[in-house]
Length: 218
Image (cartoon, rainbow, N blue to C red; front, side):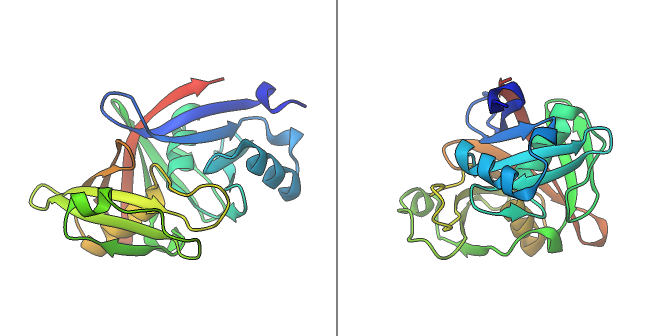
């Protein structure tokens, strides 16, 4: 089966003008890819930072892959799947993730411990973050600086360091979750070339992550 017959391509965490956002492949009917090996192969072939396979669209059961590995949790695939399928809950391997839709934003609520480890590296200014070169592979780095600390505005860039062809991630919900948990406050993050991620700490160690989604290709 040709992946074009079963694939939706989204941009997740778009800027206010609808541009940018992180590309996401969504395989709505995952029966054509029944096991981890076939899913990993498709994710590698597509080359998006993540591809999500929908195993049960009504219950929101999903399976997430980068080009090189399977993930129990990732922010932008879950926001994208919740938007595309109009879900109130998404179920990746990490656990049940509640979702809500508020105007142009789709939000998910997740736990800090679900996010994979990331190195959160603070810089003195947004200009320093903008000037960074891509570091060598080996460490997943979330580089960030305050643009306006009083307003909770942050400039960030993400470098997965996996050596899988994704040198820089345009918008990363899991890293934004970890940064929100560390700082303990709501954030308005501009990441990559112009993507926007909104976050807010919730009760019992949860964090809400929100952003805009648009359909690029069906």
